[in-house]
Image (cartoon, rainbow, N blue to C red):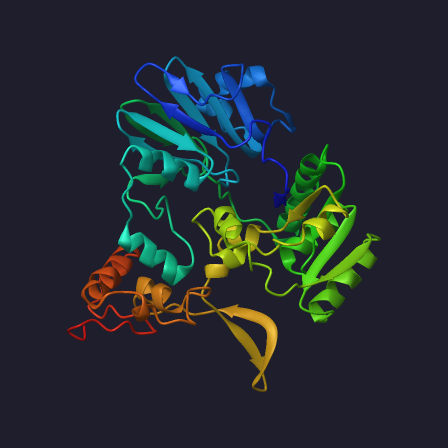
Length: 389
Protein backbone atom coordinates (compact mmCIF):
# COMPACT_ATOMS: atom_id res chain seq x y z
CA UNK A 1 0.00 0.00 0.00
CA UNK A 2 1.29 3.44 -0.89
CA UNK A 3 -0.14 6.93 -0.49
CA UNK A 4 -0.31 9.77 -2.98
CA UNK A 5 -0.56 13.37 -1.80
CA UNK A 6 0.15 16.55 -3.73
CA UNK A 7 1.37 18.25 -0.57
CA UNK A 8 4.90 18.11 0.83
CA UNK A 9 5.91 14.48 1.53
CA UNK A 10 6.86 15.27 5.13
CA UNK A 11 6.95 18.08 7.65
CA UNK A 12 10.53 19.02 6.69
CA UNK A 13 10.20 19.19 2.91
CA UNK A 14 12.77 17.33 0.81
CA UNK A 15 15.45 15.73 3.00
CA UNK A 16 19.04 16.35 1.84
CA UNK A 17 21.98 16.01 4.24
CA UNK A 18 25.65 16.85 3.73
CA UNK A 19 27.95 14.95 6.10
CA UNK A 20 31.40 16.54 6.48
CA UNK A 21 34.42 15.77 8.66
CA UNK A 22 33.08 17.55 11.72
CA UNK A 23 29.66 18.88 10.80
CA UNK A 24 26.31 18.07 9.20
CA UNK A 25 24.44 20.60 7.08
CA UNK A 26 20.85 20.42 5.94
CA UNK A 27 19.62 19.02 9.26
CA UNK A 28 15.89 19.90 9.23
CA UNK A 29 14.90 19.32 12.86
CA UNK A 30 15.63 20.95 16.20
CA UNK A 31 16.10 17.54 17.82
CA UNK A 32 18.94 15.08 17.19
CA UNK A 33 16.53 12.46 15.85
CA UNK A 34 13.40 12.53 13.71
CA UNK A 35 11.22 10.27 11.58
CA UNK A 36 9.73 10.62 8.13
CA UNK A 37 6.57 8.67 7.46
CA UNK A 38 4.75 6.64 10.12
CA UNK A 39 6.88 4.21 12.12
CA UNK A 40 4.93 1.86 14.39
CA UNK A 41 6.23 0.01 17.44
CA UNK A 42 3.93 -2.69 18.81
CA UNK A 43 1.09 -1.18 16.81
CA UNK A 44 1.49 2.38 18.18
CA UNK A 45 3.29 5.43 16.73
CA UNK A 46 6.99 5.49 17.59
CA UNK A 47 7.73 8.33 20.02
CA UNK A 48 10.45 10.83 18.97
CA UNK A 49 12.46 10.01 22.12
CA UNK A 50 12.59 6.35 21.04
CA UNK A 51 14.21 6.95 17.64
CA UNK A 52 17.81 7.35 18.78
CA UNK A 53 17.81 4.32 21.12
CA UNK A 54 16.19 2.16 18.42
CA UNK A 55 18.87 3.11 15.90
CA UNK A 56 21.49 1.97 18.39
CA UNK A 57 19.69 -1.32 19.05
CA UNK A 58 19.10 -3.44 15.92
CA UNK A 59 16.97 -5.95 17.88
CA UNK A 60 14.57 -3.17 18.87
CA UNK A 61 14.74 -1.69 15.37
CA UNK A 62 13.55 -5.00 13.93
CA UNK A 63 10.27 -4.61 15.83
CA UNK A 64 9.36 -1.36 14.04
CA UNK A 65 6.84 -1.61 11.21
CA UNK A 66 5.18 0.92 8.92
CA UNK A 67 6.48 3.27 6.23
CA UNK A 68 9.39 5.39 7.42
CA UNK A 69 12.91 6.73 7.47
CA UNK A 70 14.43 7.05 10.92
CA UNK A 71 17.28 9.56 11.15
CA UNK A 72 19.57 10.44 14.07
CA UNK A 73 22.91 12.21 14.47
CA UNK A 74 25.72 11.99 16.97
CA UNK A 75 28.24 14.70 16.20
CA UNK A 76 29.14 14.25 12.52
CA UNK A 77 27.82 10.69 12.38
CA UNK A 78 24.39 10.07 10.86
CA UNK A 79 22.38 6.86 11.28
CA UNK A 80 19.44 6.16 9.00
CA UNK A 81 17.07 3.18 9.01
CA UNK A 82 14.90 2.33 6.02
CA UNK A 83 11.65 0.41 6.43
CA UNK A 84 11.04 -3.19 5.41
CA UNK A 85 9.91 -2.37 1.88
CA UNK A 86 11.82 0.86 1.21
CA UNK A 87 8.57 2.83 1.09
CA UNK A 88 10.60 6.04 1.50
CA UNK A 89 13.81 5.83 -0.50
CA UNK A 90 17.26 7.01 0.52
CA UNK A 91 20.01 7.79 -2.01
CA UNK A 92 23.62 8.57 -1.13
CA UNK A 93 26.80 9.62 -2.90
CA UNK A 94 30.35 10.59 -2.10
CA UNK A 95 31.38 14.18 -2.81
CA UNK A 96 34.62 16.10 -2.23
CA UNK A 97 35.55 15.23 1.36
CA UNK A 98 31.98 14.45 2.40
CA UNK A 99 28.86 12.40 1.80
CA UNK A 100 25.42 13.48 0.72
CA UNK A 101 22.20 11.59 1.40
CA UNK A 102 18.60 12.38 0.59
CA UNK A 103 15.15 11.14 -0.35
CA UNK A 104 15.31 12.08 -4.01
CA UNK A 105 17.78 10.99 -6.65
CA UNK A 106 17.64 14.34 -8.44
CA UNK A 107 18.68 16.22 -5.26
CA UNK A 108 21.57 13.87 -4.47
CA UNK A 109 22.74 13.88 -8.09
CA UNK A 110 22.76 17.67 -8.21
CA UNK A 111 24.78 17.83 -5.00
CA UNK A 112 27.31 15.36 -6.40
CA UNK A 113 27.47 17.25 -9.71
CA UNK A 114 28.24 20.48 -7.85
CA UNK A 115 31.45 18.86 -6.63
CA UNK A 116 32.21 17.38 -10.07
CA UNK A 117 31.70 13.89 -8.66
CA UNK A 118 28.80 12.77 -10.85
CA UNK A 119 29.49 10.05 -13.43
CA UNK A 120 26.77 8.50 -15.55
CA UNK A 121 26.71 4.73 -16.03
CA UNK A 122 26.01 3.60 -19.60
CA UNK A 123 25.33 0.00 -18.53
CA UNK A 124 22.88 1.06 -15.82
CA UNK A 125 21.02 3.35 -18.22
CA UNK A 126 20.85 0.51 -20.73
CA UNK A 127 19.36 -1.70 -18.01
CA UNK A 128 16.76 0.99 -17.34
CA UNK A 129 15.87 1.28 -21.01
CA UNK A 130 15.49 -2.48 -21.37
CA UNK A 131 13.63 -3.30 -18.13
CA UNK A 132 12.01 0.11 -17.46
CA UNK A 133 13.58 0.01 -13.98
CA UNK A 134 16.86 -0.47 -12.11
CA UNK A 135 17.57 -3.53 -10.02
CA UNK A 136 19.32 -3.57 -6.66
CA UNK A 137 21.06 -0.40 -5.48
CA UNK A 138 22.03 0.95 -8.91
CA UNK A 139 20.95 4.29 -10.38
CA UNK A 140 21.83 6.12 -13.58
CA UNK A 141 25.05 7.27 -11.91
CA UNK A 142 28.11 5.27 -10.95
CA UNK A 143 28.58 6.95 -7.59
CA UNK A 144 24.95 7.44 -6.49
CA UNK A 145 23.47 4.40 -4.78
CA UNK A 146 20.05 3.52 -3.41
CA UNK A 147 19.76 2.26 0.15
CA UNK A 148 18.31 -1.21 0.65
CA UNK A 149 15.14 -2.08 2.59
CA UNK A 150 15.28 -2.95 6.30
CA UNK A 151 18.81 -1.56 6.50
CA UNK A 152 20.64 0.55 9.05
CA UNK A 153 23.08 2.90 7.30
CA UNK A 154 25.81 4.76 9.16
CA UNK A 155 27.26 7.83 7.44
CA UNK A 156 30.54 9.54 8.30
CA UNK A 157 32.73 11.79 6.19
CA UNK A 158 34.94 8.79 5.37
CA UNK A 159 32.17 6.57 4.02
CA UNK A 160 28.98 4.66 4.61
CA UNK A 161 28.44 1.25 6.19
CA UNK A 162 25.24 -0.77 6.27
CA UNK A 163 23.71 -3.81 7.91
CA UNK A 164 20.35 -5.52 7.53
CA UNK A 165 18.35 -5.39 10.75
CA UNK A 166 15.37 -7.47 9.58
CA UNK A 167 14.77 -10.38 7.23
CA UNK A 168 11.45 -11.94 6.24
CA UNK A 169 10.80 -15.15 8.12
CA UNK A 170 9.37 -18.14 6.27
CA UNK A 171 8.10 -20.40 9.00
CA UNK A 172 6.65 -23.89 8.78
CA UNK A 173 4.00 -24.27 6.06
CA UNK A 174 0.46 -23.31 7.01
CA UNK A 175 -2.87 -24.18 5.45
CA UNK A 176 -4.50 -21.85 2.91
CA UNK A 177 -7.16 -21.00 5.48
CA UNK A 178 -4.59 -20.07 8.11
CA UNK A 179 -2.65 -17.94 5.61
CA UNK A 180 -5.83 -16.16 4.48
CA UNK A 181 -6.87 -15.42 8.07
CA UNK A 182 -3.43 -14.05 8.98
CA UNK A 183 -3.33 -11.91 5.84
CA UNK A 184 -6.82 -10.52 6.48
CA UNK A 185 -5.95 -9.65 10.08
CA UNK A 186 -2.69 -7.97 9.04
CA UNK A 187 -4.40 -5.96 6.28
CA UNK A 188 -7.12 -4.71 8.63
CA UNK A 189 -4.53 -3.63 11.18
CA UNK A 190 -2.25 -2.01 8.59
CA UNK A 191 -4.99 -0.04 6.83
CA UNK A 192 -6.47 1.14 10.13
CA UNK A 193 -3.09 2.49 11.21
CA UNK A 194 -2.29 3.96 7.78
CA UNK A 195 -5.63 5.76 7.34
CA UNK A 196 -5.64 7.33 10.81
CA UNK A 197 -5.26 11.11 10.78
CA UNK A 198 -5.10 11.48 6.99
CA UNK A 199 -8.42 13.27 6.52
CA UNK A 200 -10.54 12.04 3.62
CA UNK A 201 -8.93 8.88 2.23
CA UNK A 202 -9.63 7.80 -1.34
CA UNK A 203 -8.78 4.44 -2.87
CA UNK A 204 -7.58 4.23 -6.47
CA UNK A 205 -9.58 1.14 -7.32
CA UNK A 206 -8.50 -0.78 -10.41
CA UNK A 207 -10.39 -3.93 -9.54
CA UNK A 208 -7.14 -5.88 -9.20
CA UNK A 209 -6.21 -8.09 -6.24
CA UNK A 210 -4.26 -5.45 -4.30
CA UNK A 211 -6.96 -2.78 -4.56
CA UNK A 212 -9.74 -5.29 -3.75
CA UNK A 213 -7.85 -6.41 -0.65
CA UNK A 214 -7.51 -2.81 0.61
CA UNK A 215 -11.21 -2.16 -0.04
CA UNK A 216 -12.22 -5.30 1.88
CA UNK A 217 -9.85 -4.57 4.77
CA UNK A 218 -10.94 -1.02 5.53
CA UNK A 219 -13.50 1.04 3.63
CA UNK A 220 -12.15 4.39 2.33
CA UNK A 221 -14.24 7.53 1.95
CA UNK A 222 -14.41 7.22 -1.83
CA UNK A 223 -13.19 4.94 -4.62
CA UNK A 224 -11.85 6.37 -7.86
CA UNK A 225 -11.07 4.62 -11.14
CA UNK A 226 -9.31 6.37 -14.03
CA UNK A 227 -10.06 4.70 -17.37
CA UNK A 228 -10.09 5.62 -21.08
CA UNK A 229 -13.88 5.16 -20.92
CA UNK A 230 -16.48 3.48 -18.75
CA UNK A 231 -15.14 0.05 -19.66
CA UNK A 232 -15.14 -3.37 -18.00
CA UNK A 233 -12.48 -2.31 -15.49
CA UNK A 234 -14.64 0.62 -14.42
CA UNK A 235 -17.76 -1.55 -14.20
CA UNK A 236 -15.98 -4.11 -12.01
CA UNK A 237 -14.59 -1.35 -9.77
CA UNK A 238 -18.01 0.28 -9.39
CA UNK A 239 -19.61 -3.04 -8.46
CA UNK A 240 -16.92 -3.67 -5.85
CA UNK A 241 -17.39 -0.19 -4.37
CA UNK A 242 -21.16 -0.69 -4.27
CA UNK A 243 -20.70 -4.01 -2.44
CA UNK A 244 -18.58 -2.19 0.16
CA UNK A 245 -21.09 0.68 0.34
CA UNK A 246 -18.45 3.23 -0.68
CA UNK A 247 -19.11 6.16 -3.08
CA UNK A 248 -17.57 5.61 -6.52
CA UNK A 249 -16.41 7.88 -9.32
CA UNK A 250 -14.97 7.04 -12.73
CA UNK A 251 -12.71 9.70 -14.21
CA UNK A 252 -12.21 9.55 -17.95
CA UNK A 253 -8.54 9.46 -18.83
CA UNK A 254 -7.34 12.74 -20.27
CA UNK A 255 -5.39 13.00 -23.49
CA UNK A 256 -1.95 14.56 -23.83
CA UNK A 257 -1.69 15.32 -20.11
CA UNK A 258 2.10 15.66 -20.34
CA UNK A 259 2.02 18.41 -22.96
CA UNK A 260 3.58 21.53 -21.51
CA UNK A 261 4.54 19.82 -18.24
CA UNK A 262 7.23 17.39 -19.39
CA UNK A 263 9.76 18.98 -17.00
CA UNK A 264 7.39 18.41 -14.09
CA UNK A 265 6.84 14.82 -15.22
CA UNK A 266 10.58 14.13 -15.37
CA UNK A 267 11.03 15.78 -11.98
CA UNK A 268 8.31 13.58 -10.43
CA UNK A 269 9.72 10.42 -12.01
CA UNK A 270 13.04 11.25 -10.26
CA UNK A 271 15.12 9.42 -12.85
CA UNK A 272 13.73 6.10 -11.63
CA UNK A 273 10.62 5.67 -13.78
CA UNK A 274 9.42 6.51 -17.26
CA UNK A 275 7.42 9.73 -17.36
CA UNK A 276 4.41 7.62 -18.34
CA UNK A 277 4.39 6.52 -14.71
CA UNK A 278 3.21 9.98 -13.66
CA UNK A 279 -0.29 8.78 -14.49
CA UNK A 280 -2.24 11.28 -12.43
CA UNK A 281 -0.56 14.47 -13.53
CA UNK A 282 -3.25 16.89 -14.68
CA UNK A 283 -5.90 15.52 -12.29
CA UNK A 284 -5.16 17.86 -9.39
CA UNK A 285 -8.63 19.42 -9.28
CA UNK A 286 -10.59 16.20 -9.84
CA UNK A 287 -8.70 14.17 -7.25
CA UNK A 288 -8.14 16.97 -4.74
CA UNK A 289 -11.84 17.78 -4.52
CA UNK A 290 -12.75 14.19 -3.65
CA UNK A 291 -10.14 13.22 -1.04
CA UNK A 292 -7.09 14.53 0.80
CA UNK A 293 -4.91 11.47 0.22
CA UNK A 294 -5.18 8.36 -1.93
CA UNK A 295 -4.17 4.81 -1.20
CA UNK A 296 -2.79 2.59 -3.98
CA UNK A 297 -2.41 -1.16 -3.86
CA UNK A 298 1.08 -1.82 -5.20
CA UNK A 299 2.42 -4.76 -3.23
CA UNK A 300 1.92 -7.75 -5.52
CA UNK A 301 2.89 -5.89 -8.70
CA UNK A 302 5.65 -3.56 -7.55
CA UNK A 303 7.05 -4.32 -4.09
CA UNK A 304 6.75 -8.09 -4.45
CA UNK A 305 7.80 -7.81 -8.11
CA UNK A 306 4.82 -9.62 -9.59
CA UNK A 307 5.03 -7.53 -12.74
CA UNK A 308 8.30 -9.29 -13.50
CA UNK A 309 7.18 -12.89 -12.89
CA UNK A 310 7.42 -14.86 -16.18
CA UNK A 311 3.81 -15.69 -16.99
CA UNK A 312 1.49 -16.25 -19.92
CA UNK A 313 -2.20 -15.61 -20.54
CA UNK A 314 -4.45 -18.63 -20.07
CA UNK A 315 -6.37 -19.43 -23.26
CA UNK A 316 -9.57 -21.42 -23.62
CA UNK A 317 -10.32 -22.68 -27.14
CA UNK A 318 -7.64 -20.26 -28.39
CA UNK A 319 -9.39 -17.29 -26.83
CA UNK A 320 -7.46 -15.28 -24.21
CA UNK A 321 -8.83 -15.00 -20.67
CA UNK A 322 -8.00 -12.54 -17.91
CA UNK A 323 -6.09 -15.23 -15.98
CA UNK A 324 -2.36 -15.96 -16.07
CA UNK A 325 -0.23 -19.02 -15.43
CA UNK A 326 3.43 -19.03 -14.43
CA UNK A 327 5.81 -20.13 -17.17
CA UNK A 328 7.91 -23.23 -16.74
CA UNK A 329 11.51 -22.10 -16.43
CA UNK A 330 13.93 -24.19 -18.45
CA UNK A 331 17.53 -23.78 -19.46
CA UNK A 332 19.34 -20.59 -18.49
CA UNK A 333 17.18 -18.70 -15.97
CA UNK A 334 18.94 -15.36 -16.44
CA UNK A 335 18.70 -15.66 -20.21
CA UNK A 336 14.98 -16.34 -19.97
CA UNK A 337 14.49 -13.41 -17.60
CA UNK A 338 16.37 -10.93 -19.80
CA UNK A 339 14.49 -11.97 -22.93
CA UNK A 340 10.98 -12.73 -21.70
CA UNK A 341 10.24 -10.91 -18.46
CA UNK A 342 7.06 -8.88 -18.71
CA UNK A 343 7.23 -5.08 -18.70
CA UNK A 344 10.58 -4.92 -20.41
CA UNK A 345 10.82 -2.47 -23.29
CA UNK A 346 9.54 -4.39 -26.33
CA UNK A 347 7.94 -1.73 -28.50
CA UNK A 348 11.09 0.12 -29.54
CA UNK A 349 14.41 -0.89 -31.02
CA UNK A 350 17.24 0.21 -28.75
CA UNK A 351 19.71 0.05 -31.61
CA UNK A 352 18.33 3.40 -32.76
CA UNK A 353 19.83 5.14 -29.72
CA UNK A 354 22.99 3.09 -29.06
CA UNK A 355 26.25 3.38 -30.97
CA UNK A 356 27.39 0.32 -32.88
CA UNK A 357 30.65 0.20 -30.94
CA UNK A 358 28.86 0.03 -27.57
CA UNK A 359 26.09 -2.49 -28.18
CA UNK A 360 27.95 -5.72 -27.46
CA UNK A 361 29.55 -4.50 -24.23
CA UNK A 362 26.20 -3.20 -22.94
CA UNK A 363 24.43 -6.48 -23.74
CA UNK A 364 27.22 -8.44 -22.05
CA UNK A 365 26.95 -6.26 -18.93
CA UNK A 366 23.19 -6.76 -18.80
CA UNK A 367 23.52 -10.55 -18.94
CA UNK A 368 26.42 -10.62 -16.49
CA UNK A 369 24.45 -8.64 -13.90
CA UNK A 370 21.55 -11.06 -14.19
CA UNK A 371 23.83 -14.06 -13.72
CA UNK A 372 23.99 -15.36 -17.27
CA UNK A 373 27.07 -17.21 -18.46
CA UNK A 374 25.54 -18.14 -21.78
CA UNK A 375 27.62 -17.63 -24.87
CA UNK A 376 24.49 -16.64 -26.79
CA UNK A 377 23.99 -13.22 -25.31
CA UNK A 378 21.27 -11.82 -27.50
CA UNK A 379 18.09 -9.99 -26.63
CA UNK A 380 14.83 -11.38 -27.95
CA UNK A 381 14.47 -8.11 -29.86
CA UNK A 382 17.99 -8.14 -31.36
CA UNK A 383 20.39 -5.26 -31.00
CA UNK A 384 22.90 -6.09 -33.66
CA UNK A 385 26.56 -5.67 -32.83
CA UNK A 386 29.13 -4.70 -35.47
CA UNK A 387 30.56 -8.24 -35.68
CA UNK A 388 27.13 -9.86 -35.58
CA UNK A 389 27.67 -11.44 -32.13
